[in-house]
Image (cartoon, rainbow, N blue to C red; front, top):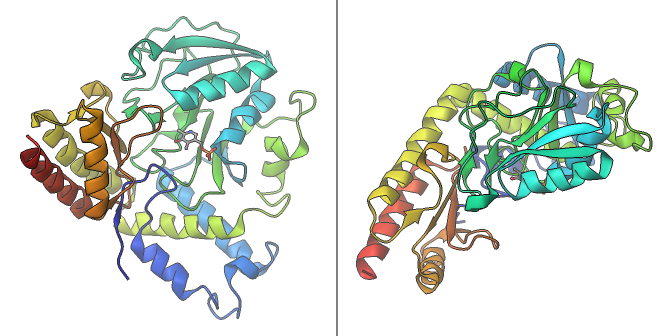
Length: 360
Ligand SMILES: *Cc1c(COP(=O)(O)O)cnc(C)c1O
């Protein structure tokens, strides 16, 4: 068996320990005689799995009691609709556009009500986070929406917008559990787990209880009502059982590693190695404003498309997978999520140095 260094933006690298444990439990989960994939979601054994996953996530993120944790399906993209359907009481919401995922959510929001663009960094191909310290925010907005870490462009909010009292809704798909978070600053935090937590097929929604209402927009499907899911502890129908089980293992792995502050330290260390190299390189350049850099997704270019392609091909041959940039941006992107070991980044930088020397 040989494993590569996988820099995929998502689905992405998972802790090897977790994969091994899952492999050990594949045929017979702790004496049940069956795999977690094969058991009823109403069984006692599964009840323990999902409850423990929730308890561990609550502990990691220090989630207050007045927030519900939902394990849902449909990916982050389905939430682009679920959020306005559930939260648009005044049919008016503000969106800050920092990339493709925020734009998609904005477009979807427009289907259900008035979606207002509060700020945007489209003028410079989303290479920065707009100043959100004093936005013009109408007092009747139902929420202010952000994509907190922009997976494609490699930017992150290092300060949350001043929403002037309006509830903040954040897509944290690509920075979930990468650092400590103050949940009380948000009305809703949600994300697909396939970037930093588990296998595709699970989306986690953390929502303040007073935002879970019966008077959702007319036509909202039962399945998309947060109230349905909250009242049934995410078991209204069959949840993505196996995916939740793996998420639970990753939560335990993060706890063992020292929790979210330890994750942050580990992620800062990794990102610094790569950014420091980019900042002194004559060939490779980071593509975003320094103060808005993401710890998770690091896009870079040589400025020459042929050289980019050569780098991607040669890095792949050397055991570094998925370094090609997003199809809309080009160049390269290294996603260095929680489970990427520091050696992966050190070896990548050594490889980049060598490539720069050979192609100078
Ligand atoms: C990947 C990603 C999405 C889309 O996730 P799906 O689960 O495929 O719908 C949305 N937002 C962000 C920030 C992402 O990185």
